[in-house]
Length: 376
Image (cartoon, one colour):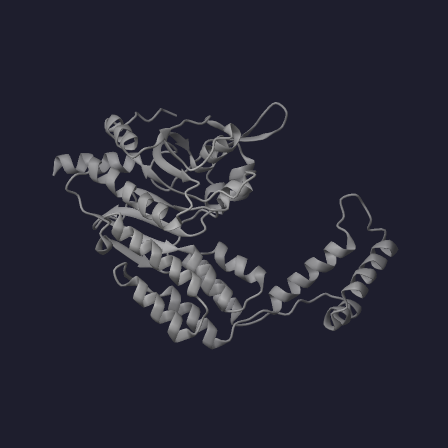
């Protein structure tokens, strides 16, 4: 596979990163595969290139930089806040373009003022793109997974269903399928009358004892088998998920939220009106959303350039709040994308809770845009 040449604008890009008070870092091309398989999500998992070490450890070619930069931060035991910049090759299958390409970006780790850090991420991405594409109008599409999570939680669904919906955030077809399922609860079949009766009475101790007795009688006791208490818990969770439903009024509320699509100038008022009209307890989410919009304005980001779509997400499972993508006006190609990933550092083994936000730049797409501009 031929190497992709480093874009001619790379020096300008690195100079822009330096002016934004970042520390440039690099990470190994060969990475442990487990973090990507566990954290990044299905969309990335099916695109990465896997291999193995001599000892059987699962490895992969670096498919993106966010996880490697976070791992590097943890391994070097560097204090926060810290702003890292990177530029290097990544390797993953794409629907359009080659599987080996350059990516650059900034990861902001440890800034406790979430609104300020979010605004700075978008402002920095816009600033870098404006430097590389002077005179080309840019637009931002923004979503907020934290607001979606707050709406789903306020609807009163079991925790397992909340996780399913959050995992599907940004995938409209998946969300629609889940909402259709919530309109019609299912019944779990194949359970013995004894187990059904014990579950119905809510006698957890008797349910565990019954499962233990069945396991003893059938000889289903191996080192790999789950304990009766664990089996009982999983069974109850499965039944709760199967039997859960939302009434038509609450499903309409969820669909109404997902339909919200306005300029960021008007988004705080629209979100506040939604919360007031539905009666959902969204005060904390609305307050954080408003603080971010104010921070955007203070950072000099034109709110008229940003569209807030309540249903907008990005295909990586580690996002927790702000998500955004930047394109040229009238062009669907994403030039930059990013968001907030506050749970990432803890999942990767950090001893402390470290908030994080960042963005990546698609250098091959930027290069094509520069070439198109030169020909125009």
